[in-house]
Amino acid sequence: MSDAAPPPLDWDLFCRVIDNHGDLGVCWRLARRLAALGQRVRLWIDDAGALAWMAPDGDPAVRVRPWRDPQPDEVPGDVVVEAFGCDPPPAFVARMAGAARAPVWVNLEYLSAEPYTLRSHGLPSPQASGPGAGLTKWFFFPGFVPASGGLLLEDGLAEARAVFDAEAWLASLGISPLPQRPRRSLFCYDQPALAAALAEAREQPSQWLVTPGPAARQVADLLGVAPEPGRTAALSASTLHFLPWLSQPDFDRLLWACGLNHVRGEDSPTRALWAGRPFLWQLYPQQDGAHAAKLEAFLDVYLDGADAVLAGALRRRFRHWNGLVPDPGAAPDAAVWRRHAASRRDALEAVQRASGDLGRRLCRFVAARR
Image (cartoon, rainbow, N blue to C red; front, top):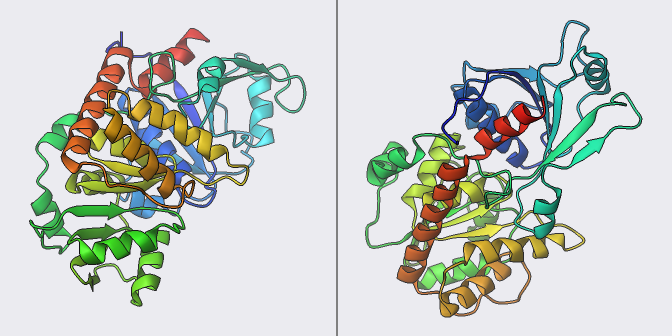
């Protein structure tokens, strides 16, 4: 079922960049995945600046368009996907409503393992008023199980990961591998727990690869250095490297190169899962504390099959990294965590192969509603 080629359609994918590029990261990967499946994609973005480093080579099969009220000659395609409830321009929606054959309108939601997402996945939302009156918007929830919308997993990723040469890739960035020091990547929002993590690094030799943005700024502030790409800083027994902005393929390679990855937001936790390495996920913090329930639901999935000792240690570590408990507790057994991370990757990849990844499931979902 997952290998059947979907019929080629014209897709309009709308994305607003909020503040941390995660929405754009997901949308660019989705646009490329749809194009790889033979779909014709227009990606409408209100700020495409981050694509200069996220996707410097672009993709000839994806047409990037600036977000605006479209001109009269801009006709909606067969499918309109609004990412994360971003609401396409009203004039465009009005044309959707006026089309001889209305496009399938999909609201792509945020990734979550919470039970309500399975109850809501695939539900219709008839539009009773506004420029889209008479249309139906459909909810599509990514997820970890066959009954959900799935996870983005492009063809050939496992094969590329299997032949990856971490030392050669690091050398291409001007970084010398330090074999006796475990490598850790750092990609985070503002992170109060970072000071304690770096204090631990003073005593336990490690090699940190620090991404630009909030991670580099906070590390630089704590160390009293400038967060310049290419800079290396010493922290007693550990070494920290400030990275340049990485393309999406290189971000994947960063995760493959490290023994522990700190990731954040929407796109990177899925990439950390596919890396099959231990990781800590910092969810986007919400004032009402909703991220706490989202974290617990994810941990129920991630810790499936873990022994009680590892599960308890990791729950505390994840909660601490998300500001939900005051200390990280005892460190989990590194070797046991590595085996568990690889096992969960293999299990979740098997689900995508059997049921189709998010791209294939979305194509089937749309075909069933045309």
